[in-house]
Structures are given as structure tokens and as C-alpha cells.
Image (tube, rainbow, N blue to C red; front, side, top):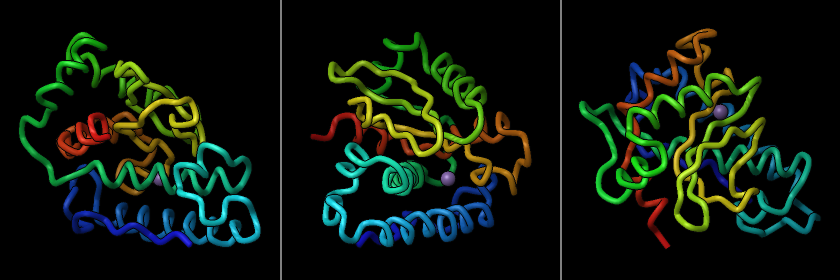
Length: 194
Ligand code: MN
């Protein structure tokens, strides 16, 4: 059985980038539903008792969709912190971003563009390949880059439920507001942790 991973901050900690109301619905209702659905689907299948990442790598259909959404949301909610002025990556991660995209500003611009142009519901990801090179990918629905053999580092949720209460249809405005609340120490930990 999987449980709802608690938020690592209070529901009002990310405002105004993400309001308390959006965070409460997104975590307490949307993510909880994926947890409830997965727990109902798993019994009697080969995926019962399997770690979440392995389910996402091996499953298809409804089990993949619900497990993928749980993994994606755990990474998403786990990458934020209260807003900081001059918030940017440092050290090895900053160097890897500059190597892959030219500069941090160029990376942000490309990441927002990939998120804005993703048609329908999905996720835009920053991931590392087996050689440690950084790549941006678009994933539709519940997609996660671990299905492509990549290591997921950072993600923006572009399902409307992630922003509609605060930004209505203005997805680009929502995405550009997220940079001050990224916890770059957590993103670096994901990249360099064994
Ligand atoms: Mn979501």
C-alpha cells in the first residue's frame, strides 16, 4: 500500500507562486486520488509490493498512469521551498546547466517554452542521461523520464489542475512564476546522489 507523502512545507509556504488553495487541492485531492486508485489496482497483480519507480518502469495502462502520477507529484512537491531572491543553482549543477544550455537564463527560457508548448496535459522535465548530460523532455499525461532511462531532476506540472485556480488559462505566467521557489539543493541532490 502506498501513502500520501506529506508536503515538506506548509500549504501557504509557496504563495503567491502557488496559492494555499491550489496546493491543498493539488496535494490533498488530486494526488490523494492517484494514491487511492493505485492501491485499489495493485492487489493480485505482479506489481503488488514493488517499489514505485519499478512499477513506473514496468507497468502499463491504469497502473502506470496512477503510479506515474504519484512519482511525478512526489518529485514535484519535493522540489519547492519558500521563495528566495536571486534563486539559482550553484556548483556542479550550475556548470552542467551552462554546459548543456549555454546559461541559466537560456535554460529557464527553454524549459518554460517546452512547458508552454506541450499540448494537453503533461509534464516538462530536466533530467540527466547516463553520461550526466542534462536534457529537457516533454512527457504527456503521467509520463516520467525514467521510462527513457533518464534520471529525473526537476519538473513543472502543466496539467490545468496545477494552475487553473490561480492563473486560469495562463500557463506561461504560472511556469515563469515558479523559479523563485525551486529548491536547487534538492535538485542537485537528485543529480549527484547515488
Ligand atoms: Mn498535478
